[in-house]
Length: 376
Image (cartoon, rainbow, N blue to C red; front, side, top):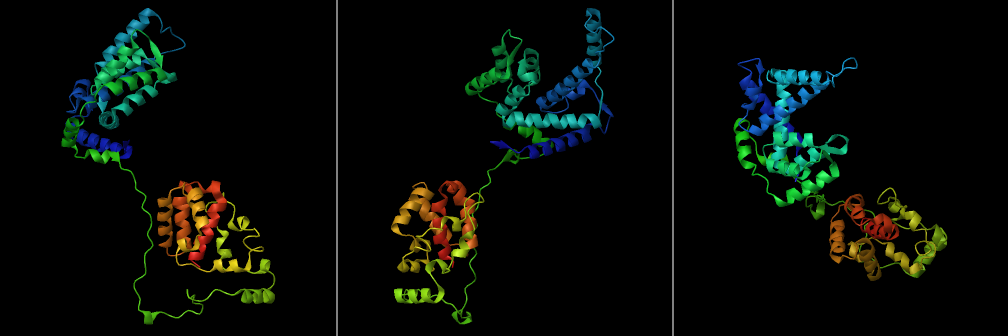
């Protein structure tokens, strides 16, 4: 489960604003006893008190001075009495209290939705990678929901003053595996009475990747189609050797002949792959190609039509991890693409990263060559 912290924080702010609107319209400040009774969810109130406790400790530390001995027993006793007295006279204005209340609501929701994360974060946030007995005691004191987790941690601590965070995390996992967490729904009902929400609002849903399906053009009348100058008829007979030889005599040697579609293969699947032209500079492709094989550069109606039986085994084994169904599905999707650009985009986005085609660049570019023939 992945929490939507943005939604949780937004709710915390709304809740705090609503509660403060109701409370501070009668008074300018709030005291300790009022804080303990402010929210119907006691955990929210306790988290506010916990925050105040941390501020109280920080203010106590502020009394330290290089000029006076604050370690003297009399000074320590007097300071403790003073700070204890101050703690009995809490007085917070709305501008300072509202952010504290919002934070308390956020912590409460996280504790309810994902208690494992709450306790895990508490342990990991321990200063100097050490969980002290004093810090753990505060967890027990101010955590009311799933308090049995905190108490079990304290029992594990025993008489030790501190443990490393790694040890405490192992304790936490052991405890969490054996106990049940409290049902959060009853607390959410109470919170929702003040500011409505759904629990699902705080949980991120997995984003499904939707493959783009090429949009087919609207049906067109045969009589509206403009004739093209170079229509390829699938029934046109393949060129004879004599015709190819005559073309060679007229234009030059086979290495100088510009084969249809080769220029379109300059693009690569991803930036790290060698270019197709680099991979196709082989005698078997251009200069040394038997004349009869030049016919295989003609356009094809389907990818499958351009793949020989031997190539099919190579493509399935090298490019699709031996999965014939994955190969067939990919062929169908590529055939459905509207043009070479769409086909290459699909391969770049879904096939190349999934099957690590960068490690089989030569086979990948052989496959791209067949795809290019489909869209000539």
